[in-house]
Length: 113
Length: 115
Image (spheres, each protein chain N blue to C red):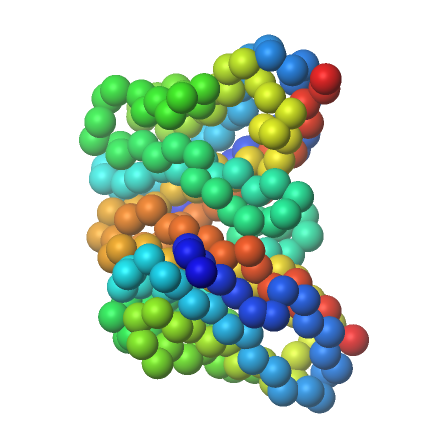
């Protein structure tokens, strides 16, 4: 595997379900990011992790819970989501967290019923 | 507030022709970086080109070049010799220096390439 991978690629869940999105980077980077891409809206930064420490939480609701066990893996735990949370969730990584080029994964298309 | 505006929701270009995508941004910072990303239908966001604000020389990457006007806060992307594979959503993004890797994206421009 090379670059940034995300699983699953598609996810359908009910509002009461608990699920997790996984991101893995194979680039030796130290910073990882979660973005939300909704239809007709710009990408929104959700979370930033630098050397496993969360450095940015962009006012994201608590029903989204990130986890970064090491510099290569990033999770987004989901619980009691709303239909408006349906979107494409993109993971990215960069060498450092300060304006270094970010490399994106293919995304997880999430649908909340 | 730091914002990025792409005023062209859709653009179209004939194969082998040249097209320019517009981007303006608003910031009070003097040090920052600008990016153009491409998102084809496969949804994989791919870096096209990057520009450091302190560099006066416009960045170039093969058929892709930018026109960076710092005073006007303008950062347009020129695609020369357009190819069918260039069809995608193009996003302009701004990253302020020393703010933890924050990337602020524009709304995107959907480019179609006609054979």
